[in-house]
Length: 135
Image 1 (tube, rainbow, N blue to C red):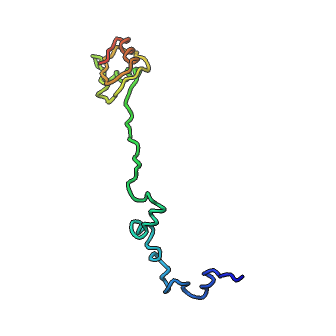
Image 2: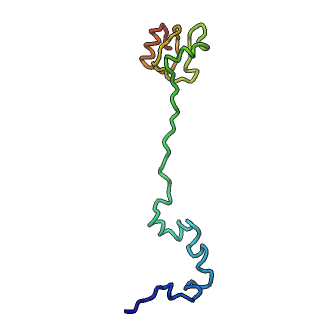
């Protein structure tokens, strides 16, 4: 049974292999432009079939960045009070940018009057046990 030879075999010796003048099968004019050119124009059917999400907005939104909450423990008050408490024994943590007072550690020095936005029950109990007060 005779078999048809493949096109490349039939074209041997024909110089341009069926692509017209020399150079017509070269460069980007053959493919309809470089790379992704024409995806919204003459390559639209390709876009619809193979890359339907190419156009349109990207639904990804990065997660919101949260700033670390500034807090301090009761045990750190002695070190802070050495220079800031003065004669009144008052420490203004809110002015220092501290948001919350936590209850870890113990107060060794005298009683303190602490001004802070929020605090734990344990921190309040330790300060009041030392004779201080949370304002």
